[in-house]
Length: 119
Image 1 (spheres, rainbow, N blue to C red):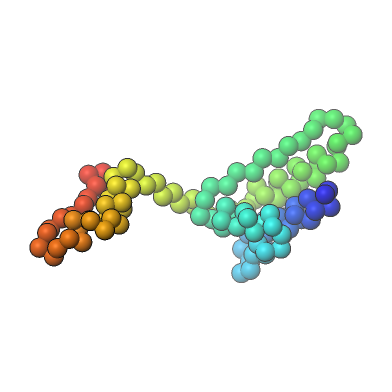
Image 2: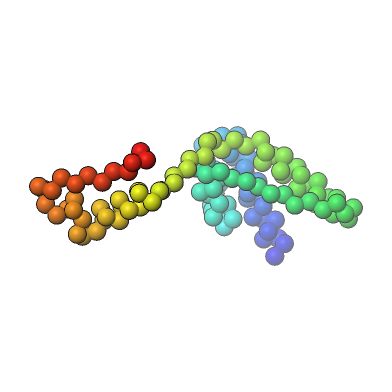
């Protein structure tokens, strides 16, 4: 199990390096972890990485490796996060327009325009 975890973290490191160097190809498909995280790492969302370290002397080697990895990740700029928030008015408009009995679909003579007052 530890071998699979290390392989996935290594693949994550490859993706982070690729993003940091802004290369044309990012190897998201090298592991299940990076494939699942593709949407989160592609720049369309805000990503936060938490690194756990232990203050115990016997874990010093792993703590140093974790901190080095966090330092490499810190230098990556994914771009601005985009946020799409659908308000109640938007959901209602989408529901009404999708309905088979929608006033907008009833007749060309009916001039119904659904708008949101928050636009």
